[in-house]
Structures are given as structure tokens and as C-alpha cells.
Figure 1 (spheres, rainbow, N blue to C red):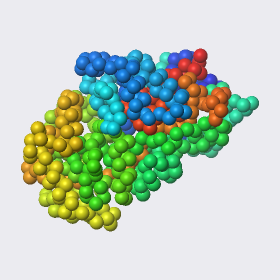
Figure 2 (figure 1 turned 90 degrees about the vertical axis):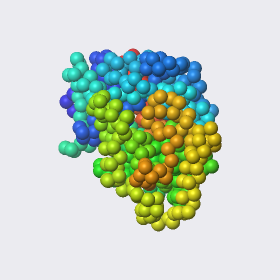
Figure 3 (figure 1 turned 135 degrees about the horizontal axis):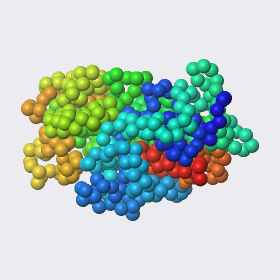
Figure 4 (figure 1 turned 60 degrees about the vertical axis):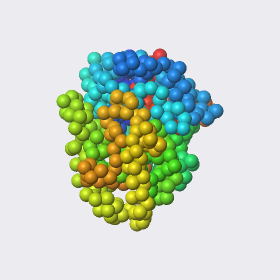
Length: 531
């Protein structure tokens, strides 16, 4: 140990980077550690689609969207289903909304991060209100563009000499002296290390990279966990520092609140065991259970309540599902969340992006059809069903029932728009009223359309992604014990803190609040440390 630091930050993901930048701004000497290699700098944010929840933004105002703190807070509280004891998470939600109005967009603009002009409208709500208006602001460049901009801001900082950045350093425990955290211990490629500082910030992410831990804390209202749960997070998000901080008395809350996705597929080129991808499920596809029957009575459709989708699939036998569609639907609607499969936005190629909007993402569809073990294709519906059966884990498909469900859906479309009673078709119509969805959603597209072949079926599993719970903090980012007392010297930011207070989302996210939560907690905690 040959350097003196003011603050040690554990984790070089988005929350850790934001905290480091803010501390450098204030003249602190910072040690930023990450257990992974340099190639994972930025953590899960670098892989993300890159959406941020903002209110009263320039983009909203230009589109004529009327928003307010009061409306956003009402939507958040309705969607979250907070419990009476969620006092601090509710206060964090209110604080985040206040920051999302000016602080976060101004901070991003200062770091040369640009937002896409069209605001996306997600999590609109199903049986309870969600986003009343569009608030999901896409970063031009996806999450990778965000991390690239912040990496430049960090490594070219005027006080970069005050920064020590070390990779392949796994923190395994805290130093605790005189009732105060004042250092960390761990291992690196050379053996053991020890560093000391009066402030230690946990920015190590959540628990959803550890599937065993995910299943241990599986939400009770989801029933028993599925056999197949894909990993949509980094394996480094294993909950180790949650456990170590708990040994110091930290209050670890709401670990059963997680943000999983319903339409996970295995990565065709996996980086680790169980590596999964999150589809943006095509709205015009029919969502079927393991027997090939349409899930209902409320048909499943994306964009309204992600938690409901996961919950409904977990009610089904065997807890996996199929979506059935055709090439025309796939070309217009199929998308995969993340930077990797959105190269036009990631690489800021405007012409290529417009081309995919107008003509469909042929490259993506053909990649999945050719390389994904979860995609099957048939020129006839009989051929498709036969291939589905081969991948159905030994469960017999109800072939006649499957054909009936498709025919009933297509017959509804044949009657014409004024006579549609199918709830999926009504919600598609509602979605298309907003210009941001209209360009990416088919209009009353039949499944068994001979001119839209080949037919496609996608086998889908639950995919782990975000921890909504975590290490409980006060409104300043300081870690609290089980008596709501401050643990001196210890702080938590980002997903490690449940994005604020050990769970500022409650049971549901309005989306875009993950990246935004990392930024807000980083700014607030750095302010606390240097105040």
C-alpha cells in the first residue's frame, strides 16, 4: 500500500464511474477498483440499450408531451406498489424524479451525451397505471455511447492524476476499525491487496448475475422458480458485497424484488454459462404456453407491464413459452435489448438506422434464424409445429389447439378494425396511435399470411436482469444498519443500493430508471462524501 486515498469505489460500472468523476471534480484522491478485466469497463450499462427516464425534457416538450413531477410521482407510486414500511424507498423515488427534471439531463449534456429526439413510451400499465406519457429517452450511441463519453470524461479529467484505476481486483471484505469502515481487502492476479481510505463506496451491482441467489430470493407471487433461468446480467453481480456488508450490520432489503424479462433467449455466441438476451417481444406475435396454446384470458403483449408478463408465464406449466409470428412481423418488430444488436444506434449511423426503420432489421432477423437455438422456421405451419415439438423439452404440443388459436386471431383481423374485440389487437391499435410505436409496429398483421412467410416460432425463457432491492441507504447514500443507523464510512450506489434506499422502485420499474438511478445515486453520494 503506497498511496493515500480519500475514497475507495468498488465497481467500475456506471454508478462507480459517475461517483469517481464527481469526487475528482471536488479534488478527492480516488481509488476505483473492479474485479473484472479492462474489457468490462462500464459494467452492464455498456451492454444496455441505453434508455433514461426523464421528465419535462426538451424532447418531450418538442413532441408536445405534457409532464410534471406530480404526474410522474403518481405514476411511480401506483406502479411500485410500495408497502407501508417503504418510507426511504418512496423518498428516494421522489428524489430521483426531482433529479430527472434538470440535474441528470444537464449532467449528461455536460458530458457530451446526446439523446434521441423521439421519446419511447414503455410500461404504460395494465391493471394499474404506469407511465401516463412517454419518458424513456434513448441515448444516441446506446449504453456503449454513454460509457464511452463518461470514460473520456474520467480519463481526461483535469485532476486525473488523483485517480487510480485498477482492474482484476476483487474486493472480498471491508476493514472495520473503531465502528467505522476504513478500507478494503481482496485478491488480484498477484495475490492479496489491502487499501485504506476514510470513505468506501459499494458500486458492485446487484445479485442477478448469480442464478442460484436469484432462485433463493425468487418472488413468492411468482411461485417456484423455473428450471431454466437465463443470465442477462454480468456473472460478477453475485451479491458477495451484499453479504459482506450484512456482516457489518448493513440492512439488506427487498432482495425478492427483481426486474426479470419474459422473453429471454440463449445468446448465440455466449460469453459465460447461461448467457441470455432479452428480446423486445414483437407485439404482433401470439404468446403461447408450453403446450402451444395462447396464454390468457388476458393475452400477453409487451409495452404495458413487464412484471405481469413474467408473473403470467411463471403461472404456466414448465414456465417457458413460445411466440409465433412470421417473417414480415419479425422484420418490422423484432428487436433485442442492448448495444450489441443495435449497431446503427450504437455506432451513431443515422442513415443505417433510418434504413432499418423503413425496411426492417434484416441482418438481425437472419442472424437469429441462422444462429439461435431458440428460433425455429417453417415454410408451412405444419413444418413449424414439427420443429417446435423437437425443442419442447419433451412436452407434447396441442397441435390442433395451436392452429385454432392462430385461426381465431386471424379471423378477428379479417372482420376489420371496427369489429376487433381481441385485447391484443386493441392494444396494438392503441400503441400505433403514438408515432414512436407506429413505425415499429405492424397494423393488424395476420400470422398465417402466405405472403409473409416463412413462419417463425421463438422459444423463450425468463431472463434475470436487475435487482430492485439491495443495501439500504439514507437519502445521502450512506449505508444504514438494521436500526436505521449510519454505518460510518460506508456508502452504496447504483444497483447495489437497489438504485437508492434499498429499493426505490418498489415491485416495478417505469424503465429508464436503472441508468438514471446509477447517475443520481453517484452524484448524491459524492456530494455527501465531500460535503
